[in-house]
Length: 109
Image 1 (cartoon, one colour):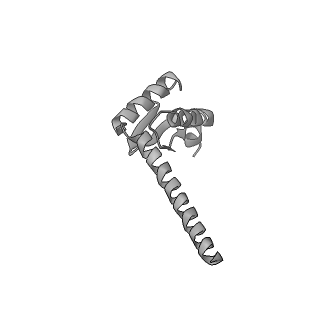
Image 2: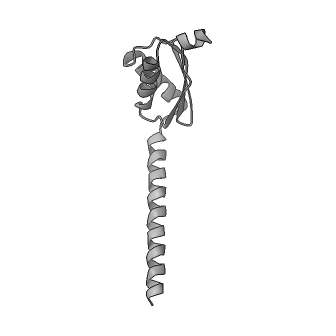
Image 3: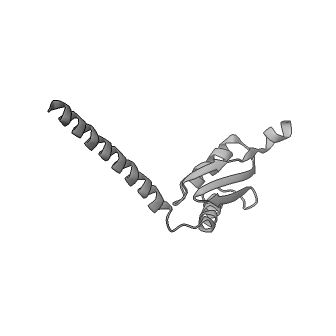
């Protein structure tokens, strides 16, 4: 009898864990839903220009399935981090792949 109660409790706990995981996945999908990659690129570019103070040619932006990739050259590590932070705060962005190079580090190589 006691073993049966333990088994039932374990099954209920497992079901709750699986339901929670599925709900979180569905929430992420819902946030991404409605944002095309083209819209994300446009929004990130706009935010980089307005809030990040980057020129349009300093940082290139691509998006695939909500993952934004940043490339280009900036003057400092602070600028690189600022560009990433700006992109992360755009609604619909799931992840940022920051491939921005720091210009003076590239020249030193």
